[in-house]
Image 1 (cartoon, rainbow, N blue to C red):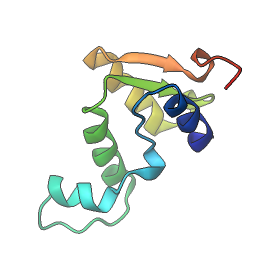
Image 2: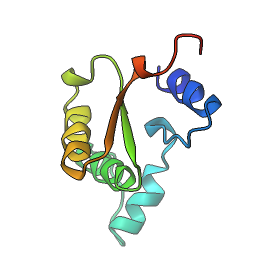
Image 3: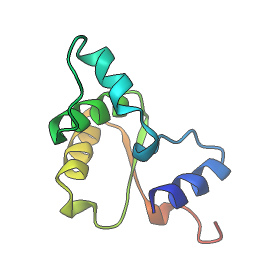
Amino acid sequence: LFARVADAWRRRGMDVVNPHDIDFERIYATLRPGSAFAGQWAEYMLVDLAVLLTCRAILMLPGWEQSPGARLEYATARALGLMILAEGDLADDD
């Protein structure tokens, strides 16, 4: 679903950050120099939220309310005043 929705928004000319495409190890190394990325949830979220800080909007996919990570992303986006979009905001013809 991430890839399909990202591709649809890219076709509309949007610069999309797909969490599945993030180089977590590389970014973690810049955030925590000298620390090894161990693949723990908190490490993924640290990188994810750092990347979110570079965005102007966030797109929430169906079922996001059941994901602790997505809820944290949503709360962060709201606190920062980012535009919050839903998958349905893209026309059905895509």
